Image (cartoon, rainbow, N blue to C red):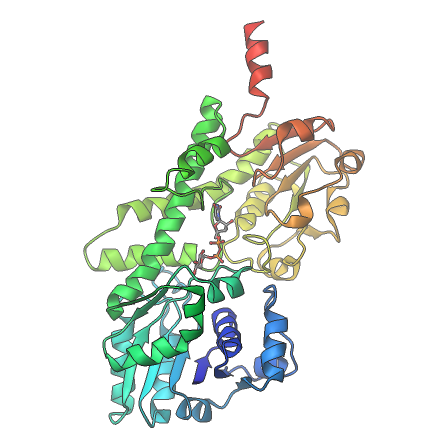
Length: 447
Ligand code: UDX
């Protein structure tokens, strides 16, 4: 099948490469000439494991083309995916749909036979209706079916998520689109991925409801972690204990510094706005958003408390800056609030991140970037693990101790165990776990 993907950013590029790998003939379109030129040379503008090989393989096989020529790509395609960005609109938190609507206007004249136009971008309820209206207004003869097919791709695991999805959600209003969409995803039948056909508005809401639920689940365990700290329980054991209940499930119960990234913060906010507009507020999600924002700021205070009363003139070394590992994405990363909080308190911040330092430079100021964890830790009064990159899972603690001014390790991702770190003479602070061995604490309390 001939497919055009409009927008060669994160979602468009991953979707295009994976669809080509299924055997479809895919043309990825972008208005950014420099990006298209780079992609043609085989240079991938984002960091996503495995994407460069997948693009190279399918480009070499002639199934994956890159162009800025919208008309040729759309007029020859049976399916056209819209995969442009839907950032938060400045000031009000609504999703900014101007890019999606611009694509609808641009592709309309190029639709010359029955074409299925699919919104892959995360769009609020009713966007499909508007996309259809725009296309029909611009080209009254267009034989078009507008479909919602949201992505559920995690950065860092996007190819796996595309090829082995839990489900594929497809919202249609025109039955003719069902056959086309079935054909697009036919290769996934082998993986027994369920295709869920539903109404277009329902499909649009499924995406937001899924992300809001996951954000709420993380926020729930983060609050439980705070309570664990207050009462001396262990949040990892609580998560394990509740996660084995199949109605709850063990995933997305890792307590940490708060969720970030390109989806959860933006999508929860957009859903809250939609719900308010329709007079049906989602108070759980409103609270989730507020708790998460406060939490990211609170992490700097947690580090300060661990160091002592005053952090003025102290040096804090951060390990990891991106919102999660295996990405170079800094969008809404907890690291941003942490750095700002520490700098506001008068601390000097040094940092190392395996992939995110270039992106970090654009959103952080006055941070001293180091080429590795050990250089970052030199002379530091605290070492803070912010993002759980694999590279930080087996740190050389004797070496760190010899380099640091004060052996304090703040583990915001609960990667390590207190006893292992303490053995090396470090003070260890983590999330929702006892700072001292409970057994030791109890025995000293009894003395
Ligand atoms: C998310 C969704 O998972 C995906 O389905 C959607 O389409 C896009 O948004 P992504 O933002 O790439 O994907 O990352 P994800 O792995 O979901 O993590 C999001 C944030 O939550 C990260 O900051 C991560 O550190 C945090 N998180 C996740 C936790 O703090 N605890 C958890 O248990 C899980």
